Amino acid sequence: MPDGEDLDCSGSHEEDPLSTSATAFDALEQRLSMLNRQAVAHSDQTLALQACEEALEAARMGNYGVGAVLIDPKGRVIERGRNRAFYPRFRSDLHAEMDVMNTFEDRSPRMGEMRGYTLITSLEPCPMCLARLLISGVETIKFVAYDELGGMVKQMDHLPQAWQKLRERQSFELADVSEDMRSLATDLFLLNLDSLRVQLWSR
Ligand SMILES: [Zn+2]
Image 1 (cartoon, protein in one colour):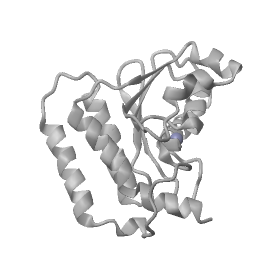
Image 2 (image 1 turned 45 degrees about the horizontal axis):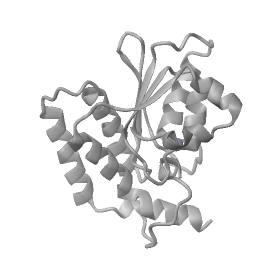
Image 3 (image 1 turned 135 degrees about the horizontal axis):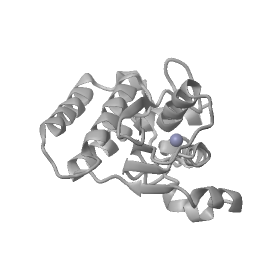
Image 4 (image 1 turned 180 degrees about the vertical axis):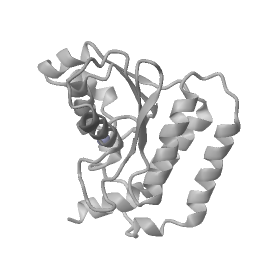
């Protein structure tokens, strides 16, 4: 399910997520830095890179490796956020998209125009985040990699009627990035996935 976050039944071995080897993080960081140096023609590559930087930081902290950025109508990155569901303490709602929108809405309490805003997340939104993004009014949501088991975008036709109505003014789409970037976003998410799922299931 969410950012793969809750259901599904893969993964079985128990381990402390923080024990994931430093080598694994270093290898991902190296791939990130190589992507940073590559000139590519994909329109979302630079913003996706920022989302993946946040994802790496989330994974380093022992959370799901998912990050997101919010862009205003002038193309400026105005918020960056990451998954904080497990560390520093358990918060079941703090997926990357929620983290970004919480900060943004706390900072701009007036319910303003959201046309022209774009959120880029490193992973396809889960059901919780997709519902939040629908209510948030952000016009365009792009995700770098599919979450085959937990993503909700593929299931949007099953939303209740009122939620379908919200969806009419928004678009959810796959980001335009290189295949290397897409594969990095997936690997960042997979890094702590199994061990964190074991923690959820054992409660
Ligand atoms: Zn989510």
